[in-house]
Length: 392
Ligand code: AMP
Ligand code: MG
Image 1 (cartoon, helix red, strand yellow):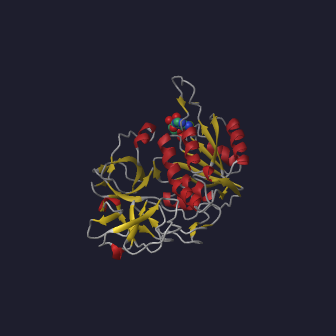
Image 2 (cartoon, rainbow, N blue to C red):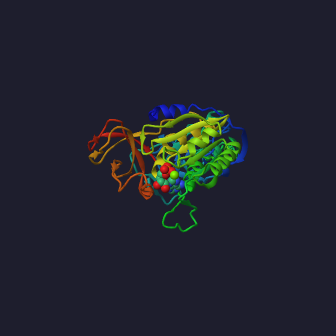
Image 3 (cartoon, protein in one colour):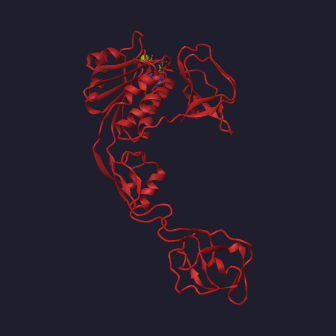
């Protein structure tokens, strides 16, 4: 049995360089950028009014100012600034040459003779200056970046309507167990629905992978062997759930051995979900997750998530945990193994206990906002103590 840290080091050192493809922006959410993207414009592209009001010279503010004209967003001033004059200007419009302040409409009084008067002592500048955010040729995003919605906005601002991303890695998902039926079936008294298959499929999809749900395999060697062999051939990564432990019907390790999958580890000292298999045949990787749905979910988050990101071409995999205080005293009976507990967050951003009955209690995860770590050897934690937490 190895520690979680050791298991993570093994999984996350896998190397794979996917091919690239060019896609439009509306298809690249959660994909990994395969090119460095530079700006072709300054941002802002001109000195830009940050508020609605009047653009003028700061040194003229003590005088009544003649309004020379109007500058709306998308247009330019038609005349030149004169002493003791100003332009009516709208948010987003280019500030006319010579103006060094935009006074807010709310701070002015309109006079009858086509003039306005500034009614305050001082004004902020209210100008976003040319290039203050980004300059032409600045590196905006580098290859290996996971594209989130804000990044897609950045790509659009730089004129990238299509972009090069790594091709999605293929992930085959197989649920194992004689007791399983597909979600559309009504289980008989000894059966349960396959919730892991769709859950793992969704987890893989949320990482930009192409997830292929291969359904349910029974606890029998021959059909298990057939479906695993197929997935090994067709996919970069195969994720199995269930049958990975040491029960009489836990055939996954036996079948994987038969299929010449080399074991990297088979047991990780973490709760929930000690039996967790990771292995490889050629360049095809295999993960065996425990069948209990919470164990599957936790192990996926702790181990598989970053493995998929790494294979998908993402750079700078960060340890995504942050330190959050507990809002209650925590205790557990058996402190031998490191444990990851699902929990909520309260309105102060502290960890709040969840009604959670153990690793079969999938529904509890619907209310969970974090998984937090209880280190090996630690049986109790006090209210206010900081714990490592993974945001879900
Ligand atoms: P196993 O790891 O095969 O021993 O399964 C552990 C527990 O998880 C058992 O109670 C199984 O019925 C349950 N389980 C296994 N696979 C799934 C699945 N795909 N969906 C929901 N529960 C499952
Ligand atoms: Mg089973």
